[in-house]
Image (cartoon, rainbow, N blue to C red):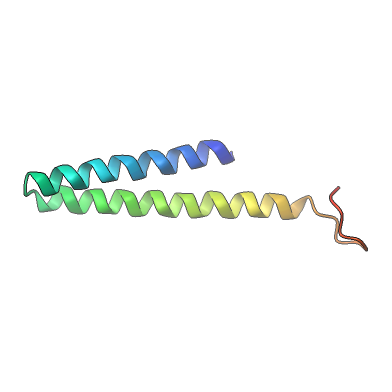
Length: 70
């Protein structure tokens, strides 16, 4: 789950950057905007993947005295 989510987020960020750069180079404002949107989508996916990983780690923590891992 975690690595696949991170890879998907990175893919969106890279594809978005390529679109944005191409849009700016060709003076295509809609392509540049689409690239920025893809990058934002990738950042959001990255944040969700981090949150999932954090919640997964918290689920394996023992809340009893000492707070050790299960």
